[in-house]
Length: 61
Image 1: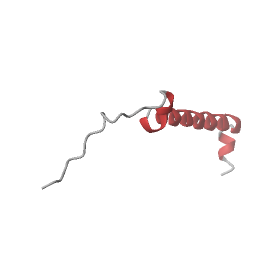
Image 2 (image 1 turned 90 degrees about the vertical axis):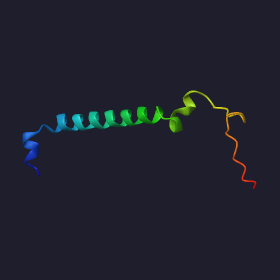
Image 3 (image 1 turned 30 degrees about the vertical axis):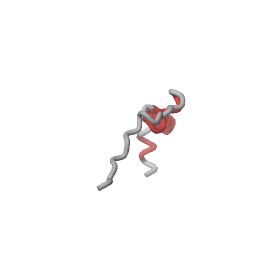
């Protein structure tokens, strides 16, 4: 395993890994912020009125 560091520069490898991890973290955050569940706080609170709710079907026979 130690021979791989003779081929690869440890500083460049560490920087590349950190840049890749940062890019993945940012991508994950932006994907989650674009969803309704996690990104809805950006648009403010949503108010659901009673008219938007569909009535339940009555099962009277």
